Image (cartoon, rainbow, N blue to C red):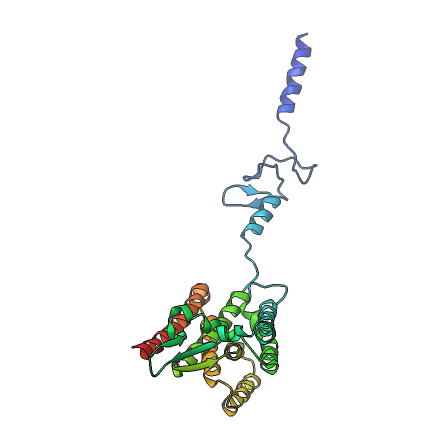
Length: 298
């Protein structure tokens, strides 16, 4: 009886000292567990950690959580369709063109960049009338009333826009486009605020031209083609009387300056510098509007 009891006690002690087996290698006994999840791991599966060891699954999970989304050279997120914003902008311009040219013709008068101050009464109309009319600075950049006008502008945007959109990312590209359009409108108002009637997306598109020139310079690509395109369009701008050169020049300068701020931003503070560039450009636009409004109504 004593012998039987002794044997049972020895077997129980032996069972108590059996080591667990690795969760990935069942033939390997181990006394080490993952310090994160507690699973037993053999020497083949041990991954050094700051405290103890981690199993391969925990390491992969940690890496996937810490992984950052892939970005372009200038901080924009990589996307499947690198021309999505360009397509949307073209679509908006075409829809507004159809509305203003065929379905709701008064829309052109309501949205165009219009400003007038009566020399007899001093009454201001349009942008000069005050902030409630400043929306025209933006809406005019989406407005066209002639098929050739909208067709040529949208063709130029489709040729040049996607390249800049892919390298800047959607948000930065859209910001450059809108800031350039607003700067073009603001320069038109600043130069001829008492008698202005202007519309079209060409100021924003010239901004895309300017941003593309900066991109070619940063990427050390031949500047000849893009410079030739800009010069060609500027020659047309100053040769055709009905084209508003002020919108083109304002958009071009804004596109270059915004592009420089976005593409030369230091990596450590890239987002801050890029956002600051946009804010500064918007402040310049506001300053031009305020200066001209004060001159006209002062």
